Image (cartoon, rainbow, N blue to C red; front, side, top):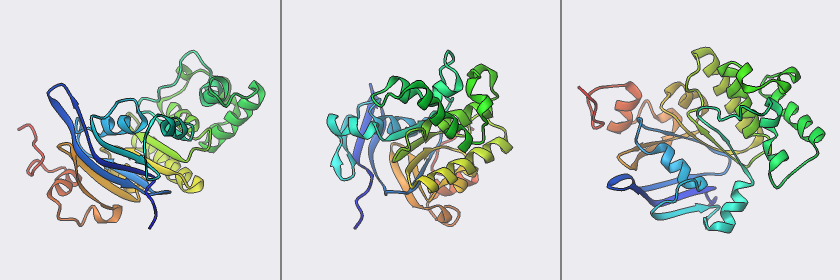
Length: 252
């Protein structure tokens, strides 16, 4: 039996009296693209931040390759992961290529600037941006181009695990489809394990191998992407079809 690349076992997290994660159980297999769906404020981003260590979970276990995530393993894990942030999170004062090659310029894997730039240009080409883009600044780019730069940075070190936080937020439908297609192609090519959080069902169908539904602090359902339209799970049915009636409370 294959050991999951990432496992959550009874993970909890509260902020004061607000219990956000109430016992999350989830396995993400090596090479799998798992998409976490759920409404705004359901804890998707908190769960992701717990995995990468930006937020410390209160209870339960987070396992990497079957081993508990202690400080030493987290450091090793972080050397082999990439992330596409929701807003791009590019550094305004750095050029595009310096953003893409940030780890090679500032991190432990430092390279000569010429080599770092060459690697950045290579990754930019993979996301459909030419070499002339490399010397521009983020403010000179459209939203779609910024998202591509963020994707190039996420794959710069050929990571084993990639996280995508609402990858198509703020994009028009055409550019959103371009980003979804790039994500799927790159994850498959690299054989990376991917975890995406989104409420965009178009992205879910484009990116996912498997889907997990987070609501009320727990995983309510998980299954292959082609089952999301057939499952009788009431949470998934309501969310996927955008229905006002169901177990997910809505303002009326």
